[in-house]
Length: 288
Length: 347
Image (cartoon, rainbow over all chains, first blue to last red; front, side, top):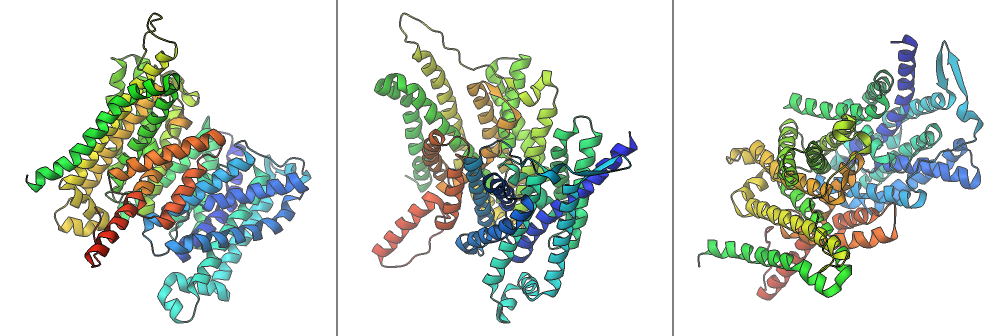
């Protein structure tokens, strides 16, 4: 096997892991702070991508600039969804919470299908989309590189914010002990709202990136929900540093299978889901 | 009459009435609406299929397992019968019980492996299982299972055309009638399985496993055994449904046979109709099949949005479904008449 090919797969995998970490960290925030496993998380990601596409097609807005619009828009969407739906199932059985977010996901996905149809869309004609570097036979796309850098910076900032800032500490307090937090004067519901909206925002930023890197369809959301969830599970719930490592493992596995196995492109998703399945089963055996 | 016999009759009479109604429905439709009855019959058949999907999912949910693998059993059933039909081993109809048996084996395997997973972890694992199975089927040799393009499946019914006594459309009617009766029979079987778990000692056992596994164990219920039993019962009907459906539409493809939407239908319908009941999923299927048909006619992509909205609204405003809501109203009425406030359990 050609070593350059393997190295190329490793580099691609590492670069892809940034986006995975960004999307997963948002989901981890929702699970860790609010205790809601959000099945609609990938749909925030998808909506970020399609808003970027629409802004580009309708107004010629550059995807980098559209971040300034997409990020607040997703924050708002998250906040509205929290206030109108999530807030009312906080005390409900886990089954109901799961099904509620599953339903929200179906609505968002099909809304997107109604608006944009089922075909992939792509943002063509931006100069930097095709810019790349070649170092010793390995090519690196500028967009992938910058996306990776932005993702890592965002995940790092979130980590710092959770440990240093007032809001971040409030979130951790609420996550640890909801009643205790409310006794010392924290507005729990408000903290939840901010955490949920922030989680949507992070996924939305990931969506902006995927809109430039790939040609997404409105159905990418569910796959990303699952990927993000499996990364969160691999990392261990509530462990942000673990998410970076887990994203790396998952992205590398995907990229290597796609490169090394013949006909691996179609197989890489299956490998991914096999990893999730085995990780879950293995964890359940070990803890029991 | 002893209360036991009376209870049996209370189940038996509505089921028998339902069966009789189903038996006469095709002929009634034909004499009422003539040629249009071909498509009416097909619509009702879709509704019956949805009811089988929903009720069989609910049987598993009664043990507290929220499965997202219903599409896996459905797709596996479709592929089993398609492959058997292609290999030409035995008569075509044999594919249907074979599909059911294979689905049960698959469910037992999955059940054993995921026995210790709970709640969301179980849900995700079953969803991942479905995706892996779909990819695996796509990777099977094309000569064996058709690859990603899928394969054709021979129809079960080939009514002969007799120009003396029949009009052209009556062939389609006879074919649809055949599938309708198969779906109806499968629904009756599923109702039987469902009533068995509701009226025997399985009911408290399932409920105990759902509410608290540890306590269930202490009370002498074997949680693993109960979960596997529910898994097997649940997958039996879906596997056969997938098989009959494959013959009905005449083809299988991996994307269609293992579609996430099958799982969505299977879980939204009982939640909308009323979880953990026999009537709820059937009632829900009737209403939702109507809504779906209307939406499908008007929206090409994205008609599933109706299911999403129904799911969200049911959870927020009607968490116990139609059946739960109606029972709640009836109970409050009775309580108001008796002048006491009573706290009734689920029924």
